[in-house]
Structures are given as structure tokens and as C-alpha cells.
Image 1 (tube, rainbow, N blue to C red):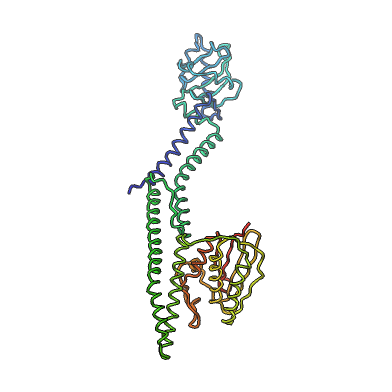
Image 2 (cartoon, rainbow, N blue to C red):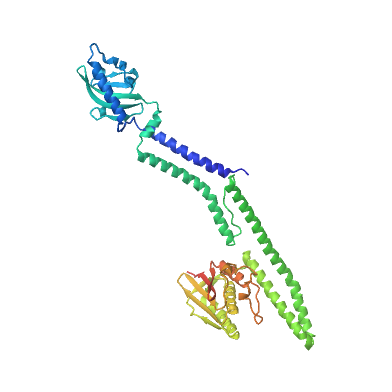
Length: 453
């Protein structure tokens, strides 16, 4: 695959440099002719003074004409310009000098010798001198062969140069980085949704994009399509198998019931064991089918106004009885007066599964704290068991997931199938509720449900 991104980064780098230079040149061309002055060098000042002396000596000769100054046997004699207040009397050793815009020198007439830079020429001077009874100002003028645009660019104030460079580079770099980071952000958002179980999420990246990021987005969406298909097929297969198993299981239970009527005392215990195991399979299949419907949004939902005490009192009463039978204490805070809007059966199933799970794995104490903040119902169910490894907390709602022996029931306890918390999570999700797991001595489950307003 071609390295489009490498080419793009390289192109943007040089585009930024070229655009910045063109912008600087464009701004420099907008300004009028400017004059830049610098301190004159000692060598150039010495040349000016030597030429001054040579001119004074030459003017003392009989029949000396000022237009003969080029005949001076001095270096830079051809660059002499004698400025007079009357422009007609000004003298230039080289006729080309008079074609230049010499008006720019006017502001230096009464100044000390300095170096003067204009777009057309460089001038050094002036030195006041008197020749043949006339006052002149001596300059050395050199034509500027540097392009006018570059001269004007050099004459731009430093703050303008810095502002243009920073502004242009920041703007172009922002444009480029935005184009570069947008698909990465889209991938990040899609990956985050996918990790939360939203299998329909896809990265919204322009399909016409041909660089590596476009290819990455295409591959990500292809991966998400296959993942969604695999998970949905797995759920459908599990639901289909569970549904198909119910018929032979029903026949098995009927046959077991008939066999129990003719069983001897010796075989009665085996029949009871078969009935017990069959009932376990029946419960598991019911849970699987119920979970499949919740995940597929096919479960019938009958939302209505529910008083909190009417919903939880029966659940807590049964939980209190179950805890006493196991020699454990269930401590419940006073229920606040609150009204929920939801499906009583789903909420009942969710709270029952979570509380019974806490009773099952507690050592001796289970705490249920319920309070309201006016907008949400906050429920905390915690036990004093061994807790769950921090790395496994976010996996507790995965169907059939079982933690290691830290929370595995003993031989005296009935084992589960790893479906209770998964069903609870989906039942709460239907009600826009949030469930969170943490360790506080044992496992702590926090539930946040919106109240009816």
C-alpha cells in the first residue's frame, strides 16, 4: 500500500513554509517604498572622507569641472553623488544614479553619515563639503541588484514578520492536524461504544479517503460488522438451542413424574435427584430465553407508576427469610417515599437477582441502603464476602461468566449459571438505570435509577 499519509505530512510541511513565505512577500509588496538606516561602518566612513579630501584638492585645480569627478584616481569614484539644494546643480559620477529615486535621501540631509537602504539602491553619507563656492552633500550610491520584493521583505518590521509566520503556520497546521485527528477521534468514539457493548457503532470516516487512516476506518468497520454478526449469531444459536431443549425437558419431567408413582423406596432418591436437576435445567433455559429477549429488545415491557415500598417490600421480606435460613444477617435501611416508572416484573427480577447474589456470597452480613436525592433512587447492596478481583469487576454481567473459587458456592449452596447479574443489568438498562460494581470488604453493587417526575 502506498504511504499516502507520509506524502501528505511531507506536502503539508512544505506547503506551510511556501505559503508563509508567499504571504510575507505579498504583505511586503503592499507597503510603499521604505528607507532603512543603519550605522555606517568605519571603513565606509573612511572612504567617504578620503573622497571628500580628493574632491577638495581637485576643485582647487584650474579649469576643474565637477562632471570630471570620475577621473579621480580613487576607488568608488564612479559611485559619487553630490547633492545640492538646487536639484539642477546636483552632480552624479554615473548618469544612472540620477535615474534613481533620490528624493528618499532628503530626510538625511542634516543627519550624520549613515548607511541608507532603499529598494533601488544603497547610499552612504552625507558629508558636508564646499566646492567652487557651492555647498554639496557627498554620498556614495550603489545600485541595488537584489529583487525589490526581497528588499521590502527585509525592511518589514520584525513584529510583522513574527506575526505572519506564527499566524500562517498555526492556521495551516491547525487545518492539517484537524484533518488528521478527525478520523482518529471517530475511531476512538466508535471503539469506546463497541467496548460498552454497542455492537452497531461504526466509525464515521469518509469512504473516499484513500490514506492509511481511511483504510484503518474501513478495516475497523469491517471488523465491527463481523463482530456484531458473530455475537448475534451466538445469541441466536443459544436462544434456539434453549428453545428446542424445552420440549425434551418437558417430556423428561413428565416421565420422571410418572416414574415417581411406581418407584421403590430404593429408587425414590434417584428420581428426586433427576427432578431436581431437571428443574435446574428448566430454570437455566428460562433465564437464557429471558436474557435473549432483553438483549434483542423483544421482551414485553409494561411500564407503569410503582411505589417503591410496594416493589421492594416483598423482595426484602423473602430475602430476610432466606438470609435467616443461612444464618446470615440482612440489614435494610428505611425505604424513602419514592415513585418509579417502569416494568414491575423486570425491576423485581433485577433487585431480586442482585440481593440474592449478595446473600449467596456473604459470610455473615448483607447491607441494603436505599436513599433518594430527589431525581434518582440510589441503591447500594453490599456483602462481607471475599469480593471480586478488580480486573474482573467489569465482567460480572457477562452471561455464564463465573469468578474463580473466591465467589464459587460451597457444596451446601445451590450454584448459579452466571445469568442473574446479566439479566439484572439488561432489566435496569431498559429503565435508563446504571449499575456499578466495586469492592468494599466484599462486593458492593451500586444502582442509580431515575425517579418519576
